[in-house]
Image 1 (cartoon, helix red, strand yellow):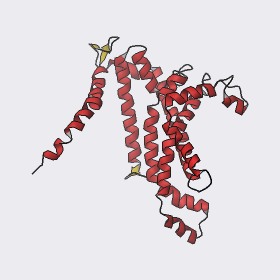
Image 2 (cartoon, rainbow, N blue to C red; image 1 turned 60 degrees about the horizontal axis):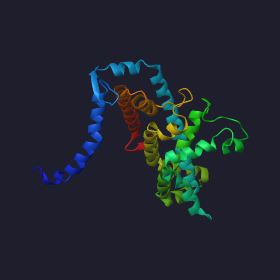
Image 3 (cartoon, one colour; image 1 turned 90 degrees about the vertical axis):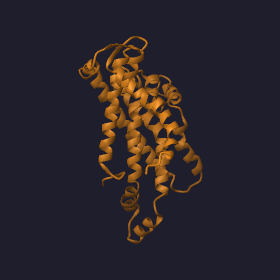
Image 4 (cartoon, rainbow, N blue to C red; image 1 turned 120 degrees about the vertical axis):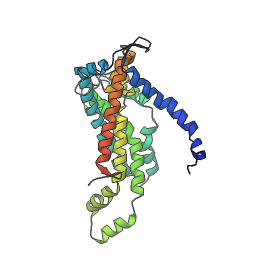
Length: 283
């Protein structure tokens, strides 16, 4: 006999989740089928016209390409930085606590706040980046460097939490595996290749998936540093949604973009899980 009482305790949480998560999502789906007024109210039902316009827009396809490049930069920089810093902190040396705190610091920094700092650092005239490299590059106004600059910044912001994940994964590796490898004559490289890397596959899978999802949602640093420019070189999908909704007042069209973005992220997530077995990436 089914016991109903245990499920009644879930009702408050389910109502809150439905109110603040599922209801707005369903409203977005409905709004994507309408033309809206300047206040975002549904004015005229147009069916799939917003989607048709979206998939025939060269600007949208450019946003998809820019977003993919942005995600690749963010994931590579964030995962590599987090992994390397976690490896460095596995050894005991003077000041280890200071370095551990420094490597984890990006997770405690607001993206909008650090974006303002980088706005000065990347300044062509007074920025410390050009002074250190001996260059004269306008990092945020040059289409060749703007996306790379913001991608590296976002990757660094993500590296803090990645550092904690990888540190936990490294701490959980059974020391006896390294002892057995030493007895078999394995050097440091072989221990790293055949013990460390395979043992970190579940953590690596989780970190990559979460970094991909977070990268698709990057917005604040792009809004502050480039506003999608120069041209459309940093106009990722999330910023394009913001621009269409709150600058062009095309809430229906922006809602259609939101649904497409949701589908893209969902498909990528499913693909990444299909490439794994029980949370483990195939070797």
